[in-house]
Image (cartoon, rainbow, N blue to C red; front, side, top):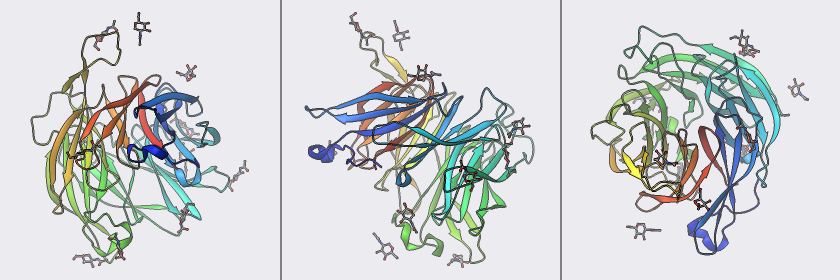
Length: 402
Ligand SMILES: *[C@@H]1O[C@H](CO)[C@@H](O)[C@H](O)[C@H]1NC(C)=O
Ligand SMILES: *[C@@H]1O[C@H](CO)[C@@H](O)[C@H](O)[C@H]1NC(C)=O
Ligand SMILES: *[C@@H]1O[C@H](CO)[C@@H](O)[C@H](O)[C@H]1NC(C)=O
Ligand SMILES: *[C@@H]1O[C@H](CO)[C@@H](O)[C@H](O)[C@H]1NC(C)=O
Ligand SMILES: *[C@@H]1O[C@H](CO)[C@@H](O)[C@H](O)[C@H]1NC(C)=O
Ligand SMILES: *[C@@H]1O[C@H](CO)[C@@H](O)[C@H](O)[C@H]1NC(C)=O
Ligand SMILES: *[C@@H]1O[C@H](CO)[C@@H](O)[C@H](O)[C@H]1NC(C)=O
Ligand SMILES: *[C@@H]1O[C@H](CO)[C@@H](O)[C@H](O)[C@H]1NC(C)=O
Ligand SMILES: *[C@@H]1O[C@H](CO)[C@@H](O)[C@H](O)[C@H]1NC(C)=O
Ligand SMILES: *[C@@H]1O[C@H](CO)[C@@H](O)[C@H](O)[C@H]1NC(C)=O
């Protein structure tokens, strides 16, 4: 755990450097250090790289409380994927704790279970599966389950919907269910967690619009109060981003006394706030701001903007994909407020710092991570304050501010 308080413009007087971890398809996990400068600006630099998650690092899950970073190797050049656990440190150095082969194509992971019985679930895109491991006290992975899925029928999109591509694993706020957007099947798979074993049991799936290609999802509650028992039907919504049609579908969530989770459609829009979708666009990530007031979605391949070149010696403007900003309303609708340049091409993943005044974006096809300032009052994303080249094809970026 870092002993320092991570920087924030709101706490500039006491600011200290903080670290970000970046996974890249070139095989490295890179540590970036971000610090404030005397003139109130920011400085960022690559301070460490580790090839322990090679060959195709695709996703990071940080367990900040326990100083462990989980990295998934998608296995793009090998028959299998793998999962690596790194011990983190304030210096940015990562040490491999354990490593294990998995079904191919892991692209997302989530921790679940209790402190005394922890497990991790992985969604496999190419592998068309969800796999789970329990995490032993010494950090090693003990295989629990491999659940494979099949397409219910021919996909609407013949190019992309050729298999049951499991794109993300999302834990519900009660910790009882794992929701799995399946891009190929236009479903969100629903898996119930047995708390005594951490084994998953499949329940009837949530149907998504045909051809939408569910990719990533998030829960949101107007009161943001996780402790007040979402399980007792306080207001809770679930939003799913469809990569193929650039849709956002919102559902009201309820739980039945018999142990089920239920979804009622409440709202839909597109990831451009209702404006026409640019040809070729492929929405990627969705995330709620730390203050629970805003939702940001990333758009890839939309080329909505031209921005000043990041190379100061190049006066030609460069194309940029976008980030879309929404304010979720108490009735579950989304108020579109802003579309903003992501800072380059293919914003596959982004994350907010804890204070919410910075947002870091992994730009897969610009080979850089860009950190934008963000106004916490209005939620508006603003111009970049830092940018770093981070090898080839960054896929995920997470903050370590403990
Ligand atoms: C990983 O980083 C190291 C150190 O910067 C670099 O030498 C190496 O080329 C990188 N690996 C790949 C596959 O890019
Ligand atoms: C679980 O562990 C975390 C981190 O060590 C701790 O903050 C939390 O209080 C623990 N929860 C319970 C229920 O023990
Ligand atoms: C690796 O992948 C191959 C081909 O899919 C599979 O037969 C084999 O069981 C996998 N190996 C391990 C250790 O999972
Ligand atoms: C770690 O714990 C697991 C499960 O208890 C055990 O099978 C394995 O041998 C241990 N590994 C080491 C290196 O101690
Ligand atoms: C799941 O598949 C992986 C990769 O083939 C294998 O290593 C692991 O043992 C399997 N898990 C179970 C529970 O069978
Ligand atoms: C959260 O819910 C709990 C239980 O209903 C309540 O005691 C607490 O005051 C709520 N906290 C906030 C910040 O609303
Ligand atoms: C949630 O609401 C549903 C429908 O009104 C009801 O059947 C169910 O018992 C409620 N669940 C809980 C845990 O209160
Ligand atoms: C830009 O050009 C100047 C002058 O040729 C050179 O010193 C500098 O290193 C270049 N900067 C970059 C980022 O390439
Ligand atoms: C300058 O930037 C443009 C736009 O990104 C790019 O197409 C071009 O190759 C760059 N020129 C050089 C010399 O790097
Ligand atoms: C954020 O926006 C509000 C409203 O426009 C403005 O009053 C405030 O100064 C802005 N904060 C920063 C840090 O720019």
